[in-house]
Amino acid sequence: MSRRSNRPLIRWGIAVNKAKPVIKQTQEQVDTFWMSEALALARRGIYTTRPNPSVGCVIVRDHELLGRGYTGKVGEPHAEVHALLDAEANGHDVAGATAYVTLEPCSHYGRTPPCANALINAGLGRVVMATLDSNPQVSGQGLAKLQAAGIATTVGVCEAEARALNAGFLQTMAGGRPYVRLKVAASLDGRTAMASGESKWITGSKARLDVQHFRARSGAVITGVGTVLADDPLLNVRELADGTPIAQIPQPLRVVLDRHARMPTTAQLLADPATVLVVGESATDQAEVWPYESLATLLDALKVKKNIHDVLIEAGATLSGAFITAGLVDELIVYLAPTLLGSDGRPMFSLPLTEMSQQVRWETVSVTPVGDDLRWILRPVRTDRGEAQA
Image 1: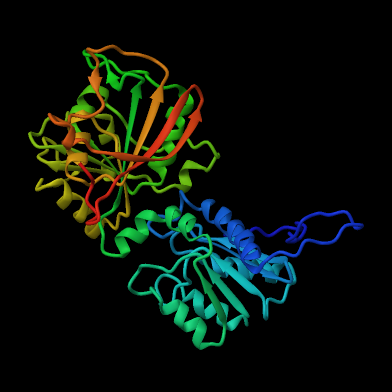
Image 2: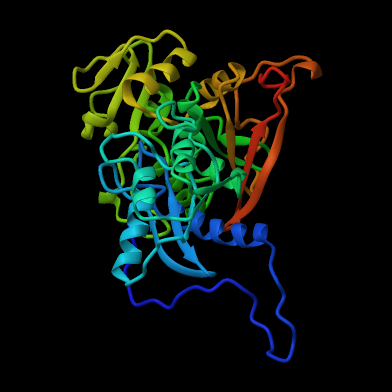
């Protein structure tokens, strides 16, 4: 999706007094600046591109921005094509210019023609990529096609940021399972509800709005039937802080683990049964039903059958604890409220550990204030074999 307007050109450099010498920037600094611009564009499509990756592109010559674009929806032109069209609409010739792309340009025919071909045909002189694509149909092939055409290439600028933006897509395309985020809202003393099950509300409205961001990024939201019985949640995307129209966002598949057909036919989820999947047994024929084998098998099936790259877990202590015990959680998102619910409250996770050697350690990615609460993002400490460390 391109921005076509009479905007001023962005120029690289530092504003200086004419009486002072101009500070010359290294190529690495220039590349980092423009790739950061491309990443900012890529984030604009983060909610709408699923199941495609979020990609941004800027085209630059002599430190001036000629065109920019990002991947919007499935079936529409990709970021590189939007950037080329944007440059053309603003009267710029891109021959010999440099394109900064957050993901290796595709080299195969899918819903759209290869972006590598578009860059070659436009006469680009250099293409800078943040990271290679792990899709076997693309990985290294887009790079090779550009090099064969005589275009200079650079790979790895802002790579960590680019890979984090499309963590699920890159993980599944490399042969792994969907990227699993587990979200929990808790009090300072680690409680998610009173002993009675009452839990509305521990966190404030800003934290609850923030959760919508992670739902919108997910191809599936998984919960247990106990949560459905206790809270009757919708688990859909209803509002986003950046104002993205909800109609543009593919709603996540709501997955309910129910081994004994306990989900009531009056559950709010079933108001839109086309986006509900019951795993186990179901007392209704309104939704699709899969047999339950294991949590790992479920994730594999969501990848293969539903083309899902990112999963969000919003469940009670038992199911959340089961995902952690199985080593299937890639990211833990804790909304921590400045309140105490007491020692009789329900815990965050059901983890019947008895020895310190069994503890599951995490490392902090970020801690961010959200209203009166904190959003704490963590990732499991992995062993050399890639397993979660106990």
